[in-house]
Image (cartoon, rainbow, N blue to C red; front, side, top):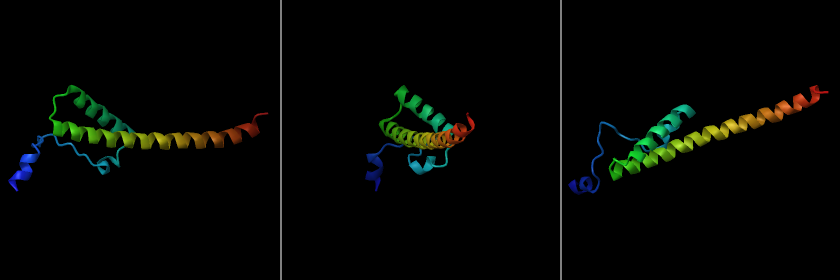
Length: 94
């Protein structure tokens, strides 16, 4: 059992990085964006261990996907508002 622990070095427990997409499923766009900025900043510093860097990368991917979900939803709402608004706006403009 000790062999399993030697295969992966310990990530400092004081700053864990959750890596599952479900961890970000309830995030607002702003929450996901702000954390993504923090993750990218830490990765760019290059001072993390390989394991932590991989965990950060996975977290960043999940956060980016969450942001994209919000942006797709916002675009759909804007498109719906425009198509509904142009039908009403076209009939009243004369």
